Image 1 (cartoon, rainbow, N blue to C red):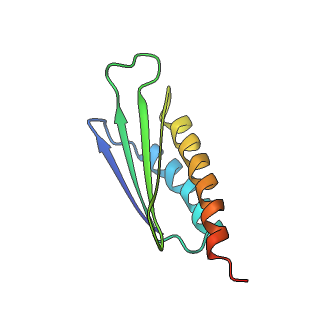
Image 2: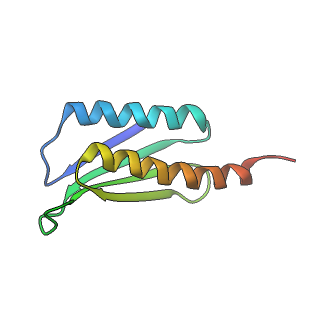
Length: 99
């Protein structure tokens, strides 16, 4: 599992790294064809109610899968982004099944 976590104009957090890697490891265990993930944490200064943005791009055979979410906390943003990715991966897994 190759996970690259970047913080864009946000202070790095070891607990957020651990939380994100834990959630992604479940995804990597369920979908063995995944190669790696790039995670970006950003903050939208103009949005005062939410503004915590999490982008995740997954590398796998074929086109990459991307999802993003904007929430009040980074942990919630990670969960929502992974839910979106899981939905996309279920569709993609149907393509990889051999008949």
